[in-house]
Amino acid sequence: MKNALVILLLLCYNGLGFSQGEFIVQNKRKSDKIHFKFINNLIVIPVEINGVELSFLLDTGVSKPIIFNFLNLSDSLKIKDTERIYLRGLGEGESVEALKSKNNVFRVGDAVKFNQDLYAVFNADINFTPRLGVPVHGIIGYDLFKDLVVEISYSGKFIKLTEPEHYRYKNCRKCERSNLEFYNNKPYLNVSVKINNKEIPIKLLIDSGGSDSLWLFEDKDMGIQCGDKYFTDFLGHGLSGSVYGKRSRIQEFSIGNVVLKNANVAYPDSTSISYARQFKDRNGSLAGNILKRFNLIVDYPRGYITFKKNSYFNDPFSYNKSGIELAHDGMRFVKELDNVIRDDENSNLTDETHNGTKIVFDTRYKLSLKPAYTIVELREGSPADRAGLKIGDVILSINGKPSYHYTLQDLTHKFYDDEGTRIKLLVERYGRELTFEFRLEKLFE
Image 1 (cartoon, helix red, strand yellow):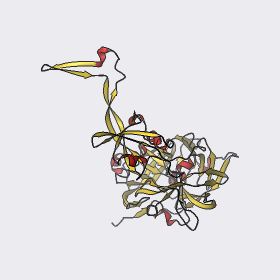
Image 2: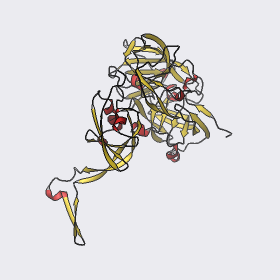
Image 3: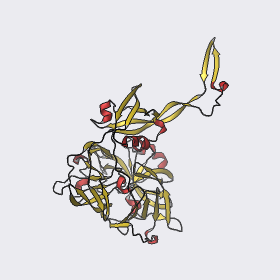
Image 4: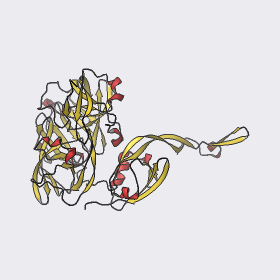
């Protein structure tokens, strides 16, 4: 097509330009606090676009805001000045069709920008809501960070946005401040890892939109190699499809004088990250399961990031020992006891007579819509796979408790429990209810 463009989400818009205006904080303090939802190590913030309230991932790894499942939002958003383009991101798939739209009004708390570009994706399959279990309409990153000092309190579950000229740093002896480097509007940090007793300096993309701890790109010359203790797994879902790779652990991960031992690491398949590796100096990504252990001051205008340990710092590094990945798969009717009904003998049963036949209705129960959770990924050879579970199975209960009593995040955390923990699942498969049982297994200790 005449106006078709291919934009690599990992490589676009050079420099730290301010050509499209800026976010400004519209209050006297020039600062505002916004509470967020913390789901699977990811930050979900409220964002208003052209007067429509939506939920976005706060993702330092993206250059421009992207809206997913656009066809369901197109009427209310009333976007204009559009141009058809193609986007490319992580994953093994092809580029995806989208619209580039100019001159949109974005509001995050009291921070407003009046001429913001956005990218709207048509493909309804590119939708992170089922994987997170809460509504997520898009992602936002660079445009917010470039204009404001962004404090991220993972422990307090809020961000604070302040105009740079009004931000004052406090003395903090326990803080670790590092310089940021930028490549195509994305922040990079110099850190070090210890692998096979060798200290290796590396450069990582700061990726708050990733839920893992650390991704490393294997490089034999540098000594960045997985070793023998690993398992192959689903790593995540990018704009261009699923990402697979190897999971393992490293001896140490260091930011300045702060050291984390035995941190989780993933080594993504080279085919899934071919575009990410076009920045030759990049060695991987620093993601949410490490970032959450600190409260951060992200200061793009001055080129700094500040880390301060929080209450998550000493949380153990765990991983999914079942082999199951779940997604929210719509709603289903379930029969529940109606607690509103009085528990006396006359309130439980009613009867009617039709053509001489007596029909008894039990009014103690009601039908309610509850979330359904479905297996969408299943690691080959895992405990769940060996037990006979299959992709597409709907989880009805876990260890005797209905699955709808849990959020998706809480249900998934059951699979991160200790080695040997017994898991009993009741599932629905093609209309039949089946029971499976297995125990969680360690994989590389």
